[in-house]
Amino acid sequence: MLVKFLMNPDPICGSPNMTAIEVQALLDKQAVRHLPIVDEEKKLIGLVTKSSLKSVIPSDISQFSRFEISYTLSKIKVQSFMVTEVVTIEEDLPIEHAAWLMADHRISTIPVVSDGVLIGIISDSNIFIAMTSLLGAYEPGIRVTVLQPDKSGVVAKLTNALYEKGGYLSVCVGYYPKNLADKWISVCKIQNLDQQDIEDIINNLEEASILDIRQFQELK
Image (cartoon, rainbow, N blue to C red; front, side, top):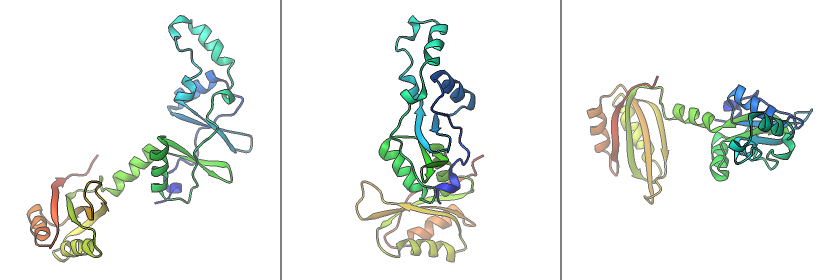
């Protein structure tokens, strides 16, 4: 799955001439956490975050009247507090690249650019939606987590054994467990077989053990 299939292609944007109070009002009105700042050609020049906006609000806000705060914020231009070193991504990169950037830089939103022009934005919420789909959150069935050695062909043996008994795998994903060397964990969502049948099939496989198995209803 690529970034372009998950990103918001029409994000709310701001201009460098906006004031802090205008930015705050726009963030509140649109219920967004980040505001890309673009020039007249839609080239990305910065990003406003809740924390960067907070940096220009007086620390002891109780000492000021609402009028004084509004007046102060109306004099501060976005150029003075926006983030200028922005982590960006291109639309044709896979979503795991976006997820890695978010984790590595501890950020929750990444502007999507093409030759410097803003064409979209992808957030951690977009990644979460993709993950729920990849893990079959919208599909009913028996969800089973299986531990196997990290060897060529072991996943095929698992899926073939389930298929040969009439099982339909709506989901099959896997990962390397952090604390178990040379092991592989598969998470499968299976339909057309009951739980006991699935347990019997997997227990008859060499070097395969069930870590978790449960009936899973479609999330709504």
